[in-house]
Picture (cartoon, helix red, strand yellow):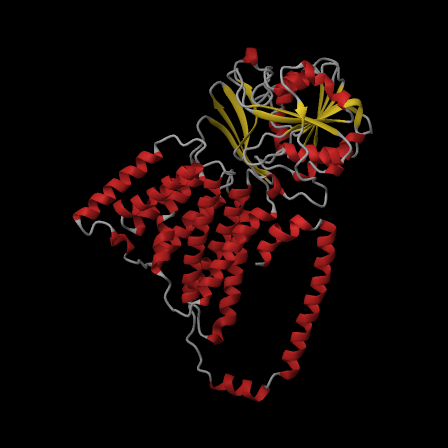
Length: 562
């Protein structure tokens, strides 16, 4: 309840300063209460009775290494799965409390529910169901996150699998005299699961694969438990049930083959039908685990179609692929820049920056701008608009992305740029603070981690800082295309609170082969500074101002989820 109260009640109503103040007060009260309890326990306990009870209690049997290792793994795997699900569902939105509190709450609830039981046997239905759901969970893990279907599928699997593992753990707890050892081992297991995701996985995997790894590990552990509920006998007992199972399986696979673009709930129905069909046709936990291993092997080892390079840094995983005449740099599940493979067209802007989209209006109005700053490099695609005599400064937080963009083996935008182009590694907002005031005629903000928005780049204080670096008549441009967030109302309200003016334009479809939909917001000191955009092909309208105002102490992402 306390965890859920934070994103739903505290974060929307209190800024960070108030949160810090109240947290300090409550923490001091907690420390005082805990110290009081310790003193009471020390001075008020009845030593003779305690000693007598301890002396007469039977000595429990020794605990072997295999049992200790079982405790360790049963605690480690749900912990790793919880963090894997959290990473999976926040990849394209943002790692904000609303999204990491939900899986953590589900994880803790399954622990509470499992240990509330006094039974010494784990519920076999939970084990069977968790094993059966491994296949749909792995299939759903390949769906771009940010949509309701992908998030819900991950949360359902986390709930079922974590409960099954915790129930096995609770059923095997030892007598009271061994509980200290038991909880020490399970605590170490939970910490190890978290350390695997935080420290080992980035070194072992060249992509974000902790979720898929944990799915298979949980399936294997449940398989080793050796328990079944008889649920698999539900189908096939009579000719009618056999016929029903065939129809169910065929229907599930036919639905899976049906295009479902823009229909997330239909996708969930498909996944459920696939799980039920697996119950009908396969009928054994071992078969589920085998299929899960095959799927996981494909997801973790097989390269993407046309993949040329995989890599992973502290800031996430990236992939370079060649497909449909384009070389594309993807970060997580989001396109971070493309270039036409045909050498004759390499300097042509494509994707979000296609000249027939809003970017064409922006750069068409900036032909006389001399100094241009860009936060977020990607493949360097914005440099396609560079002209001789201009100075372009790119700020990119990930040094490895800078190496890729500067390596002509992969992309040649920076090499072919007719201007002076510099790259600086580091957080864009902090790097801009070291730039002389009034330096830039045009400042571009296009920094994303996969599809997740870096909220600290969009606050009122950030806009005021950018404004100081802007020359008279300059513009600040934000590329706000996002699958899960509607940012224009927030940008309009925040710009207004910063004493600035904002206009927005977007496009659904572009008439060219290499263009993709995109949305943009342009901010300036006065409406007159934005009038130059009216010469383009798009209708640049004042950005709506009915959204929340983001500040350095308040930026609740839940308020802009579309």
